[in-house]
Length: 223
Image (cartoon, rainbow, N blue to C red; front, side, top):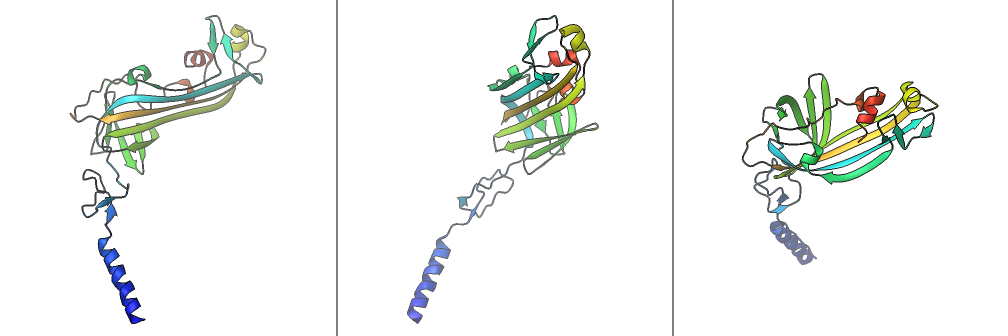
């Protein structure tokens, strides 16, 4: 019996000695483990650096009702405009309005479009503070790539008499449900030089989705 126990003990020691330590084996990761021999996929990376947009995934939709009826399109004198749509696709940064780079500095500054904003990064969430506005962006980051998601949505109801006056509709009661999501995919700019010429500011909320929309704003910002 003792021989059996000794045998099991010896085998256990051998397997324990042969087992490789697991952890993050990428030396540039923030949680690099110099003693790890097997990478367990736990590596995490810093967003500090200059990032160049490479593509933008777009997901958007809008549904508008007037007097309880879904409106497919409206014609208020300038030709028909779609007010009920859904779109998903991938664009180049230029097609989506992003030209230039973004930078996250080691002292908590985000540089975009010539502006400087404060940011924090934790658990794949970037929180950006701009004046009195706080914006939260889910993100994923590797040693060479960053994906940053911008989302906005609106569900609102209001009365717009101009719809009856200019569009000939029988009701002025309007509801709008809209969503816009953009995921910006970026690559690490190894030159470390930032070009702040970005045509669209990240997190810009200067459009009708975030305030009570007016008719002209709706028609101009449909797509």
